[in-house]
Image (cartoon, rainbow, N blue to C red; front, side, top):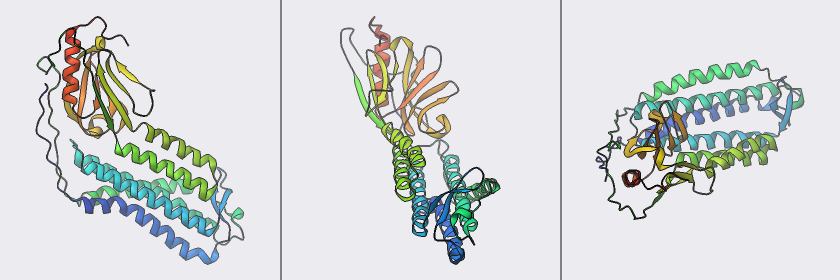
Length: 344
């Protein structure tokens, strides 16, 4: 069997401070837009322009209560997602934990600023008009929003530096080479291995997008925007859990809730297999189906994974528990050379 190392040391628990840093930009964005609303409330029409076309003319409207509900729901939901993702990072085995978390925080600050500026600017555009139809939102405001987001990202990076974070390294376990573990499998024996693996960050992101789509339809009546959020959200949530199978057909990865799309790597395309810890961010750039130079994989989290060296020299990884057993069975099946192996 492939050997494993002792569990990685967990980073010190500074969860409360980091969670506040993750929620802070959305709290500030909400507070800033509410301050603008209170300042110009007496000068606003009953019907507010909430959406503007490419020409800057208003093409969507909402009342004061709807605007406030939309504003609060958006920032609260995004703040909750930001805190959730940061908590996942705090509890994962990240090889570049410090850098990954600071990038997350910088992204949160940039997102909050990019959303807060147009919302506040739209209120200013409505100020002094008899009806929201007369409001004009110049497109240069979006360029300003990008600049503000860049400044906010820098501020988020600096604030993240106030929290001391350990530089955790992820040690390797068996790499699947010639000395890697193999199950003692007779030529006539049949063996299989099945595990489910999932990603809370992907599931949370999918649910948040779907909820935002439903809220958009209910509060704003904008079905096009609603569907653009709802459909991707449901797809992300549906594919956030996968079934991993090792048998005489090779390595198979498919969604837990659907038979397709399915990835299968036949035995005749496998050189050897092993198990090691990987970093979802630094090794593969995030969660989901990932492609990087010389490697690809289904990455649901950071931690142990089956690493398959293909005959073309490239690696394929699947993050899953008990990966050493899966690797040992794959090696045994590859070595046995059953003529049925590799035919899917």
